[in-house]
Structure formats: C-alpha cells, structure tokens
Amino acid sequence: MQDHKASLKADIDRMTQILLYTQESFIIADYLIKTEKISYLNTIKKRNVFFEYVKHQSWRVMVIELCKLYYFKSGSKENTNNREQFNLRHLIKRLQPGGVYDWVGVQQEIIADWLAEMDRLDPFILDLLHLRDKRLAHDDRQVYAFNNVSRKYIQRMINIAQYILSLTSIKGLDEGMSFQLVRSPSDALKKIIIQLADAQCSKDK
Image (cartoon, rainbow, N blue to C red; front, side, top):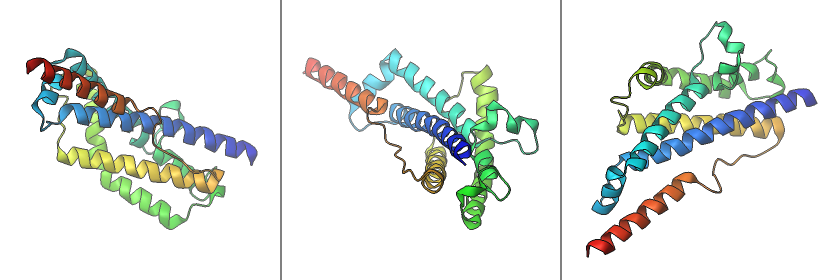
C-alpha cells in the first residue's frame, strides 16, 4: 500500500505542476490580450516587444500543458508511456474498479460525472490538440484565437482538473491541496505593467 500511495502522490504532484503552469500561463495570456479601460495600460502591453513575446509564449505553454492533462488516445499503446502517464483520464482509469488506485475509493457516480464532463469537452480538447500540432508547431500566425467561448472552456478545464486532483488527494493521501502560488508570476507581471504605465502617464503630464 505504501508503494501505491507513493506512486499516487508522484502522479498527483506531477499533474498539479502541469496544472499550475496552465493556470499561470492562462492568467498571463488573458491579461496581456484583453483591452483595458486605462489607455496607458494598453499602450504598455501592446507596444512593448517583451510583453508581446511573453503573451505568445504563455499562450503556447497553456495549450501544450492543457493537452498533457486532457488528451487521451483510447486503446493506444501510448496510454502507458510518459507522454500520457500524467493525464487526467489515465488517472481516472486507475481509480476505477480493478485499477491500481481503486483502493482510493472514489465513488463511481463521481467518476462517471468526471468522464461525462470530459466527453462534453472533447470537441474543444481536439481543437486544442490541432492548435498544438498544426499551428503552434508549424505556423505562428493566428495564435491568439482567444474569445469568451475559449476563455470559458479553458477555465472550466482548469476547475475540473482542480476538483479531480483535490478529491483524489484528500481520499487517497489524506492531504488537502492549494492551487494558489505564493509568488505568482502573473501578479508580478501586472505590478510591473502598472508601474510602467504610471511612469509613462507622469512623463506625459
């Protein structure tokens, strides 16, 4: 049992790391893409080459990390390799009866709800996979196809991942989880941009 607990902890820790990368990248990309009511903030965000680069890279990281967490090729040998080992569907499969983590005791009704939610997200997951494999790998144009619909789905995927990892950790390891970073890169970025906008505003007066 101790070996199984250690394995579960390693899986949860790795997926949590992936999720935190996803969250921060989403917050950063969303912040740099959206239009602010204060014009000076827009000027700093849109005319600074470095922030354009950060926006681009954050978007890429978010897409890649979400695909790690969610894309699962059913029936493929790839399901057991490192590429998909830290995948939510793979974790759920292990939590089901007969799986190596069935001792955790997650109710089958909850597992069924998780799988149904992922099935509903499948079209969006496939869109992300296409973006990862086709656009991001071979074409840097039109990367920022970011609208209110995609924002909604990305936030939903983050929330679902938090719930799955948190409940599994509580039941299997008797450990609660926090998905808030103590030193958040997105918070630091916002402070820097506000300081630069304030300095530009003062200079123009």
